Image (tube, rainbow, N blue to C red):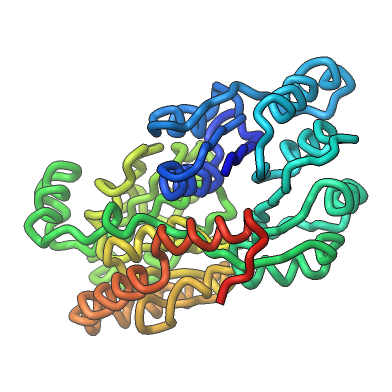
Length: 370
């Protein structure tokens, strides 16, 4: 099968990058895969390193000039390569694909993954649902509900949750964890509980609620924790919030990391405390590494774990509830090992990359699955 993946992000791309790269890894050995994305993007850099994947530098715009530029380039690519499937991942690339295949008979099957919880009721979405979508993949049941309440309800709609490589994201030994902590922080962190995340430092990621929650604990308890937040380095306003809570010495920012395992593996507890979230690769990677995860009761996040078994579910924007949860952990620190084992078992059982690839391939073929 010949598949074209499109993605409009010119820089980081977040979870879209992980999603597409995982499909390339899962399907590349048996199929001809092409990725059309800006050459400036993180996706281009990562996908270019995968053997057998063909890369095309493509920009996405709906300006009138695109009819003679990117849109014409994309149409020529589709006509020349005769793809079986085009897998679109965002509004900008979906629009351009719709224009590129206008009047094309037959045209490739178009599969759209809904990665977020943004509204789907605009005229543009109606047009794309009517003329340029055969199947919608929702990344969670929460997202599927949004799709079914939109113009895309006329299409095939499937829930296919993210898969991860559970061999790549696997627990490290206690000795390895100590060595990683020593290398990154020195000896001062050896007796602390580290709360870790690669969810990013945007306000809506909720990490400042965790900082505020730890700050609410009595001094003797609060000093037991250290927070590690990977992503873009926070600006002055966010750093000022941390400082106002008296938490500056207890928060570290390792920046954007290509291989997040070295950061996550030092942790005792993971966290994804977003105000909006479709599902979360970050949560699944943490669980694969054998960490229980603290998540908010928003979007598809609760679909990742079992409350009080492989993690904890708290209301969004709730530093007080976070503080209560962390205080209970300190009362029974032995539960972390058991919950971490449950998180790992859950990941191995439900997050397999092979299942993710198999179900996505069935969507490409229009096949039902049991």
